Image (cartoon, rainbow, N blue to C red; front, side, top):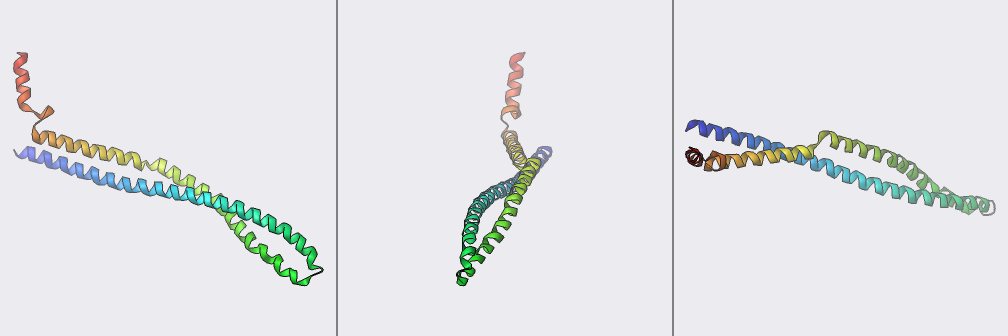
Length: 158
């Protein structure tokens, strides 16, 4: 009677608690995973950009060496020598980014490994579904909750 209702009520409360926790762990798991994807993409873009800017900087530097010899003869050519400033600033900034991004990525990877949100999500969701299955088996009086088949089995043994 009343005890059975309470048992089912408590089981549903546990199911809902586990299901809510599973959803929370799922959100954290996805957030961390998408952050890692983004960091990987940014690291790749920064590395390729750094390589391109470094190559262009070296090429322009070589041209500037040539221009400096021409400036002696043509004073108007001096305005082209300052074109390396942007490359120099960008190269310096990207060098820092290329060093920092893999460190941040490794930090996020260790956070993911330490928190284990994906494992917790799977465990909570599985437990919630197992409780649901037990509730329905209990309410339908099937499998181990079938009191009629237990008495029939007991009569056959005698």
